Image 1 (cartoon, rainbow, N blue to C red):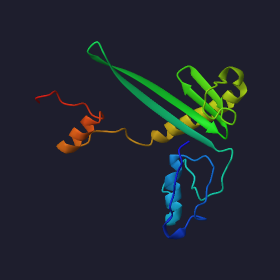
Image 2: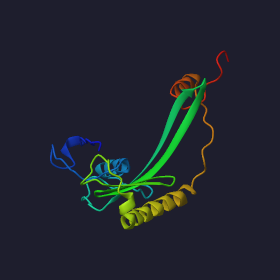
Image 3: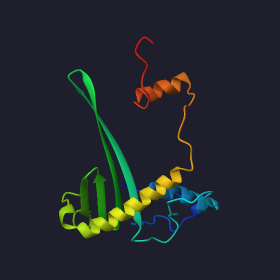
Amino acid sequence: QVPLLVKYPGGQGGVPGRRDGRLVSLVDIAPTVLEIAGAAPADPVHGRSLLSSPDADRAIFFELLTSWYVRHAGKTVVDVEDWSGVRVADRKLLLRGDEIRYFDLTNDPTEQSNLAASRSEEIEVLSALLADRQQQSSEHATQFESGGSADLETEAAEQLCALGYLPCPPSGA
């Protein structure tokens, strides 16, 4: 649970100091900014403006790719985990390969008790929502060409290398 603070220009957007406990996602930022600016999105978006009425049963989808770099016996070992999930109200489903985690966040807000073994019907419903969203995203992605190369200035390439985003040239090169 990461708070989102928004300060609207000129007092727009509701009551100053208002708290809103609804579940939101980063995909809601663009539609909110566009609505404040009086503009409509050029393409359909997954997010909803935060100025709209809350929807308690709204599904929030997420993905997480973690990379662990460990030095072992003089070599760097990389462990990558690819998670996906969906949250609807107080129900949260996490998937990683064949691993399934299901949490009831009302009774277990810190996600300590995996209820996957006892909630197969709920898992089936949430899994179907997640699979449908992943299918929609895949179909949408086919409209675009995959990446290519980018011409970077030396300083930018060095900074990205230092952060681990680009391979670094061998020393002395």
